[in-house]
Image (cartoon, rainbow, N blue to C red):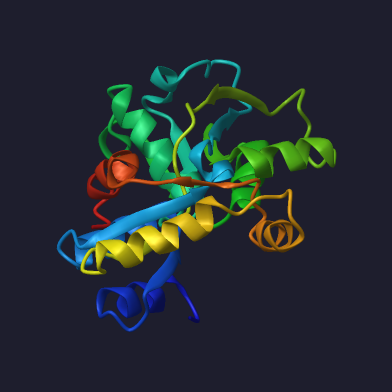
Length: 220
């Protein structure tokens, strides 16, 4: 598949049996298919994704302090750079489109850091792993730009099948993923290709937060 949109169409139309989706892409596919998508398994790493909110404004100490401020997300369709951060803002009782002075979309995690560092926005949200890499590589002045909120863990990427797939076939595929182990050479090679420690079962409920945020942002 050339991109996520092509993967969504292929699985919805049963041209493929299995697709690798980001959290938001899964939600899009599930909506597009009238609820006929089943997330089957996901990497252990994808059961505990987190995002951070950063600021260079000393007056910003919590999500509530974002009221009336200019705030940057990453790409509009990014799970970790927009939708999950938005879902936690919504849970905190703020609606970004009404309560922030301005919502900006930087297009990328590193661009969000740059916008906050330059004072173009008072705060920004991005994937924690990108932030940690910037800190480790000393590409950001942590005296000036600080994390003021780290989201709870959430679910991201998964392997999804069509709900019409026979249960026996579904179980067989799931078992193949779940039985992969780093203790044998073939399993280790496959897991390393997927950058995974191991695979765990997934379920539709894992993606309710992303779905609510996508609806709020008018992306569904």
